[in-house]
Amino acid sequence: MINKIVGSMAEAVADLKDGASIMISGFGDAGAPAELIEAVIAHGATDLTIISNNAGAGEVGIAALMKANRVRKVICSFPRQAASHHFDARYRAGEVELELVPQGNLAARIEAAGAGLGAIFTPTGFGTLLAEGKETREIDGRNYVLEYPIHADFALVKARAADRWGNLVYRKVARNFGPIMAMAAKTTIVQVSEIVELGDLDPEAIVTPGIFVNRVVLNSAAATA
Amino acid sequence: MQRMDRTALAARVARDIPEGAYVNLGIGAPTMVGNFLPRDKDIFLQSENGLLGMGPAPAEAEIDWELINAGKQPVTILAGGAYFHHGDSFAMMRGGHIDICVLGAFQVSVHGDLANWHTGAPDAIPAVGGAMDLAIGARQVFVMMDLLTKTGESKLVANCTYPLTGLACVSRVYTDLAVFDVGPQGARVVEMVDGLDLDKLRELTGVDLELA
Image 1 (tube, rainbow over the protein chains, first blue to last red):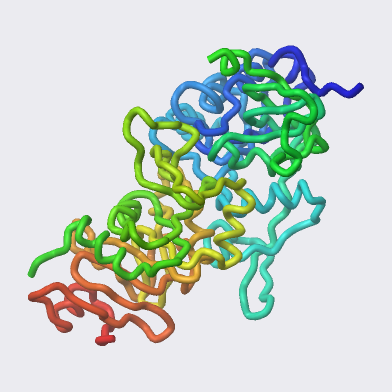
Image 2 (image 1 turned 60 degrees about the vertical axis):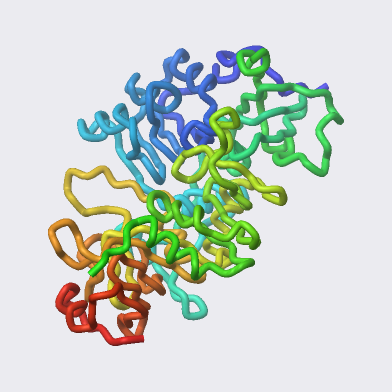
């Protein structure tokens, strides 16, 4: 019997290594797996590369990773925002490298990794600073920039509910990067607020099929709230 | 001459959005355009974070932090709305499925180049978000901005000096003093506020202008 459900957040991230690349779902706080990130901080892994839309705001989630100085590099589209002070301080001190990627290219490069593509030609960013030095090509009269997939060792994803095979459904706009990150990482770890029996999720409505998921952990705080 | 304030400008932009349009409103002033879209017409607002059929802000008691817009403000979803992931959301832009987006700008060139993501200041922490995808993806890009900076420099320019967001992507510029069409033919004045004329507008902007 296959059961992808693990007993705790700590167990879910136990095999993290220093230097790992980690995709983290979320658009701001919506869909950010704050409890899994807490477990990463408690684990102690450092020198991490974080791939996410934002670079953390306030005091929890990616901001807490920044504050703990565990991050060597951030690949994201929108690091600077109100209350991104922990990232800002590390960046200005030269302690964290930033690869700024237009949001749609971030999504497309993550999708390319999950789909096994070698590269993509994207129109976004052509003629701008963010495409400087990159190969370009004109195809049918439109200009494109060559961009490579973004892979990761781990994806940390927040979903609403899962079954023991790792099938997932999400909640509202907390879905955001979850489904595409789940496809792109070697190991995908999902925190959910509800675990259901096999067959309880409508196969027509499953957003992420379990093939893309390695571990599921219940966020018991959310489950009892 | 009477400048249009932000509210009047938002209402003016809203008048050019037809029923049936799929529309993305940028963060900041463009978001206000949504307040002036006619409620009795089906206009589909897209939010880059995975929402189509976005409705107005909720009452305090109805706020759900997993139902927010691109500016991370709480919103609602209309009956018939849909959620989707980021890959699909940006395919809607890049794939030409969004009819109109409305963006703010630091500068727009008379040929439709857009600069709205980075001042280029060496100590600035850059952030781009979805601006570049929207700029080159939406079928029509409307810019909404003050015509002049606080120090009186024109934001409609012959060539952008700020780092570009996209090349030749803007079709129309709505400002507090005039509305312009921009593109390969240069800038054309569609309308001006009372008390302004073409010569005065040429003087204010320093760019070549013709009437549309």
